[in-house]
Length: 285
Image (cartoon, rainbow, N blue to C red; front, side):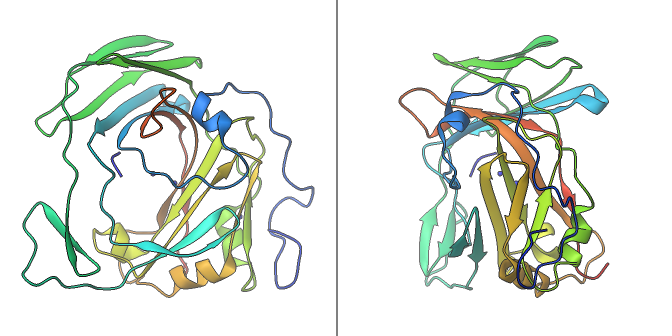
């Protein structure tokens, strides 16, 4: 993919957050793609993705992205799915003869990486500014700006125009890391106080191997509507805990909320507005 991502009552589950249940989602803008998705997870991978992330606490925002002729390659494949989460697994594979530099060995087959597409300059606008972004030598887009105002974010490039609203970070209802630690072997539920209608949330978790550029034996991906809570299956967390935690600089996972817009006839191209967020947890702390 070019670029993406908590305590229930029940048997074996520990209540570590709010006993009142999730908060009621409030209006906060919408975008055509994220607003059209249902209750289930969306694990699709756009071929072209531009992301605008906003840090209102620091009055900063950032644009990044690229366009390609196909989805990115991945070592992992889906092993199991439960609710809004899936467990990704990896099995080592070898290719004979070996793969070229622009290929990846997956399940014994050399697969070619997608090629990036040059779509020229990109016009980025947001409530406090405007900037023309030129692709770099690898045909990627990257720029930073200053912002303190919520509103719409837009891009215009090569006949494509997309708009999404900015989105703020989630306000945790309790200690998310403690909710995972105190799950008693069962599921963990993370809750936040400020869910937004028509927004989506996603989580990506890996171990120290994955954090340091290696291939973890197991990873967790979750995605779904912003209901104010996200349930992580206990068995998936067990698989992550069994991974490599022998390095010091790891334990940061992607947990973010976003709006997404696509052209009416092309869901493989997407503009996302992402709020500041994250989750720090490691089993040995």
